[in-house]
Amino acid sequence: MLGAAVLWSTGGLFIKWNNLTPLELSCGRSLFAFVTVALLTRHEGLRLNATTAVAAVLYAALLLLFVIATKLTTAANAIFLQYTAPVYILLLEPLFFKEKYRAADFVVVAACVAGMSLFFVGRLRAQDVEGNLAALGSGVCFAVFFLLLRSRRAREVNRASSVIYGSLLLFLVTLPALVRGAEKIDARNLAVVAYLGVVQIGFAYTLLTLGIARGVRSLDAGVIGYVEPVLNPVWVFLVLGERPSRWAILGGAIIIAAVLAHTLWKAKRRAVET
Image (cartoon, rainbow, N blue to C red; front, top):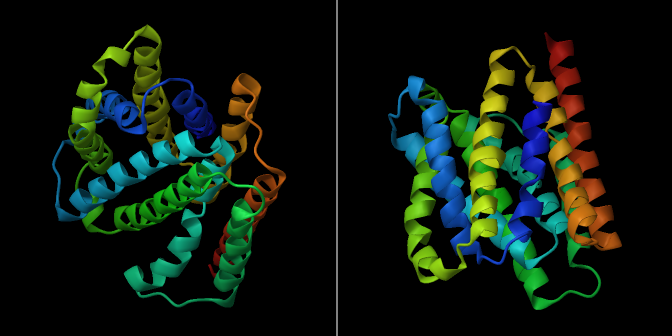
């Protein structure tokens, strides 16, 4: 699980470390991810149903929006705002699974909204605002994608089918952009998209499934997952020198602290109930 989180955290650095457009980068990355995940999970079959088909579309959208966000704004803004997904899950989960809202849910939502607002404080370029909005959109897509994967129908087929076909869909949609920018495909850019597709998505997903198969608790998985948003801007700062604003750091800290505290509280409440 820790290995998966560390690999995911390198996405921001490699997305910035090239001169490809978001569409060109997404095309190459998705092709490598499609082949890698399909090969690694082929023993579970490649069947798709209606639920995982919708999840695949959402997966393609969240990948593209995150790449756009990382290209337009700082890596910290992109990853922290994508990690508002638990907020949308809290709001949508009762509607999907007919559960009740709890007061603690609204407390963490309010805290995260306050943290989100800090990303729009201070001097912002137009592309920063666009990047922040793309990151928020990525978080919404991730939340609905996650909720769909929790459904009974999604468990009837290969758990990775939405990742496989979402990657294929994104490759096909963005292929014209890559064809137009084919002259940019040099050794460095090829290495970047190969790393992002094979390692940052393919290998990381494999490590995730191995961890789950070997009995990692959902609470542990959720807590370890927060290594990704913490390390993502660190790699970009160490290699490229990109500094997020103080407001963004504060906002990100509030979001992570609120969601992490809610995760721990929810686990403790379930332990008491059982």
